Image (cartoon, helix red, strand yellow):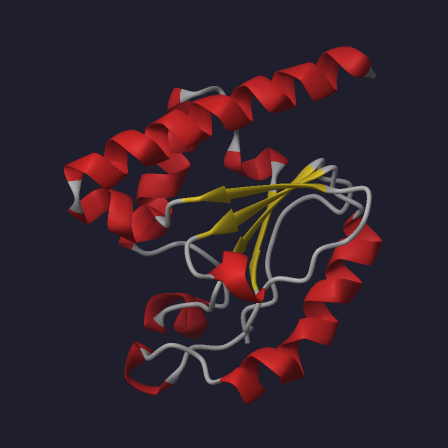
Length: 147
């Protein structure tokens, strides 16, 4: 089980589709290669991983790391919805395929960005990913000046 991690009062929540084998084994989200790339890129734009909440829709890895089946997504959505209610983020960042399956809550801003694993593999995606993280950093800076 990989429930997620981060501050209970995080202004920003990252949501992926489901954890990989390494994450499932250790119980922490985004700690493999894609997670390290995400953490490094966030830091490049002044976003600290420890300031955001990171989770997935599905809280366990799928056999052979396949895409989760619709019934797996449906059974895990109530947990994600509860996490959103508890944390009350102002921005939810949807990574890759999670954008299609995540619920939308009124009053929360949603940002859909390229999944870090795609950004690592393809130069065009990497440039788009970095541009999206830069935009996110600007939104976070505006949140911080409004309060």
